Length: 274
Image (cartoon, rainbow, N blue to C red; front, side, top):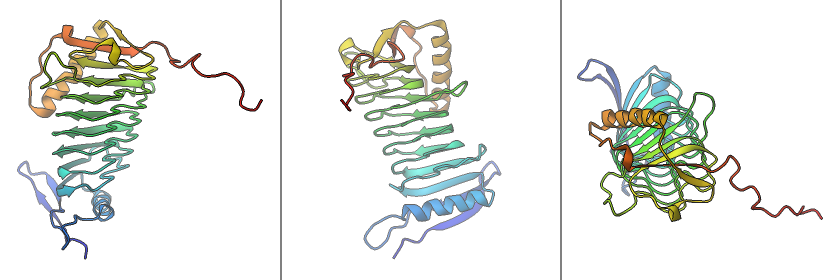
């Protein structure tokens, strides 16, 4: 038997109408509400005009708010959402009061995802626009295949550390790793940073050595424009998490592409049909 969930509409302390989806109940085997049922309820609330939705008791449900497009929509999540949180998101704001699992913001076009805990592997996969802010750390392959077009420049800000292959195959946008809580003699990023990068920039506050860079990546000096961008990203991070971040540009390492074609000359040009 599927868990029973409750949906209520009430005014919050600011007098704003809020739809509450209570998904805390479990079935007789301890399993949470099925992800399709939860997402159906979210879509129903949006269709009926809800612009502020709070979800309680989330436990691994996938695809929460995927493909949502209302730019004035806010979805708050208490618990741990599953993979593909906010996939194909185009405008809304999602806020997680806990941790998130893999592929947060997959192919997101615009909007904001704010995570007060950690976000695991492949955060920001194929991000096209919008912004992802993570108070804690993230896993492997953060920002892989990020792209930008015109004025749509996506950004990911990680408060702690990341694993290997940060910014792999990046084609645009910006990733900032603040290294909060990482000792000065350690690096807040793993190996193969920027492998195949051919657009965009990675900024790391802390130690990054050349042997950590992937093919196609290089270390460069900060420009005045970089400092303006970093100030805006850090200010947004501070406001989102009610914290303070030290401003010391000398501690920030900029990683950018060596060229727009990082693998030129590295493949066998012999036609396979001969």
